[in-house]
Image (tube, rainbow, N blue to C red; front, side, top):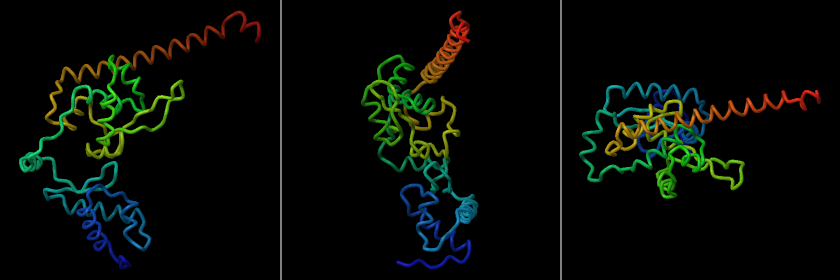
Length: 229
């Protein structure tokens, strides 16, 4: 089907509004451009989206940009009322699942072994599978060591579910559990444990780097090294 030529910004806004309201997932600029036969610049699309966002400023639904693209969503202050309409309860995640997700999110990319080293306990394969099935983590490569363990990282969907555009917008660690699963019984003490484990791991890595630098310096100052120079 041929699409009519877009002659002005208002017409473009109406089309984008309809598409975004009908979509069941965020739409990227690339997906929006595919709706039109004529070539539309990203700058024009962004102008239309920014104006459309302003048009919805006083409404209960807002237009937001997340990692996967643009979407309409109800404003946070409306959520308590909407939640009462639903019979199903939000998923509850165990402390182990949230700890594993937090480590991957804030230290990515990491291997399952890295997570186990930080947590101090083994990571059940079902935990990784749960996060993969939820669409929050994925394999992004393999570490070049014996066994080539998978490197895990978070996905754009994870960021979109948090309402974020990039990893730089990740919230403080103590807020992560509440954003992902408000009903989960993760205490401040448990979050602080994860924070301390992450900090301890960073200190360990820093000490290891210092030790390697000292070893290198010592080798360069040995009599054999001096004789060869």
